[in-house]
Image (tube, rainbow, N blue to C red; front, side, top):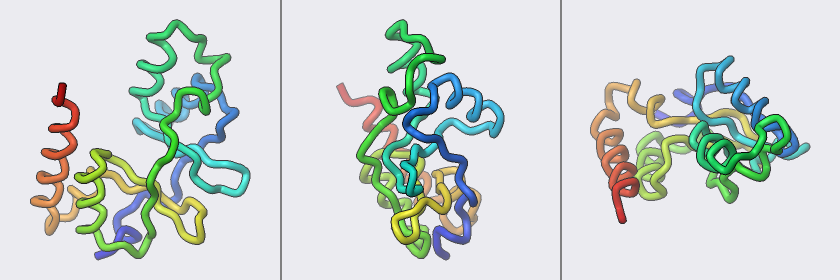
Length: 142
């Protein structure tokens, strides 16, 4: 099974100049916790999460309506091809300690795959458990 079979398609996206307030509104509207950030060519330049909003904007006393997404997003995001096998995506999530990966074709975003998407595939429960374990270990390192 490939990522194309389980990814969220199309991905909801934002642009770097959009406000953090808009990012939060989009997350609420779509009931999601992360949104890829793209440039004018639909190439991924980052990802903003609900945690980014809280830690990098609100907790620093910034105004979400005045703060562009580009200042609080996580940059240098690794992407994955739509024809990648699900097992490889789970390994990548575990290795890189991430829960979501933008999916690209010809360097343009076409979707988003999450650990939850992989978990919905009955055949991949062990890979998900392993990935979550590795992701969680990263959170508890001091």
